[in-house]
Image 1 (cartoon, rainbow, N blue to C red):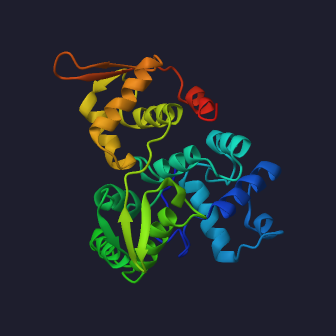
Image 2 (cartoon, one colour):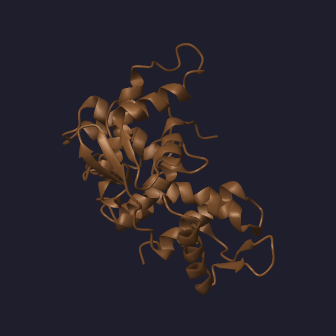
Length: 268
């Protein structure tokens, strides 16, 4: 079973695309990525190397042996510099979805605090993280680390070197951010992420309640149920799902056969 990252996995650093890209290239060239290999010809310092290795694992680009996953291989082949918005949506999703390898604070902050048209502060996020870990066993989380966690997360979504181009966060002033509703991923990317969500939430099931899908995904995509339903309608037009809204309870039926096949279509 994959092991979840600890709260300070980021080593105070946000996810930086050039660093993550370096991890992917190194793993592709050598079969696996090691700290020694990353130090060769890299501007990254020791702690930043540790952080980027953990971000690669947390976003499911590499496994616990620092080898490329099928997702990592696909991204490295089609978008090695991690410039595509569709790639960034995938990274965001895997940091936030129900079976994320990211520490608990990451999806908690995103799904509870990131509300479009709301304002966030570093200190406010820090307090929420402190409260989240208040009941953690002694020694497993240091309250002063909460500010580093908040800074790493907020920087990841506001810095253009990271995932800022998704448009989720805009820095208003030092330590103050505005949450925006981002542009929804394209149908191929949404189909892949929906399939990944389905594999986790509804395994071995071909049909489920529409609200189970919309309620589960709207906080991750920072949007409303109407947008999710419209996106499902587009997938229905591609014969990937069947949405039944004639009689209650409304249902969604999966028509795709392979999550991996949907991944290959993301960069079509």
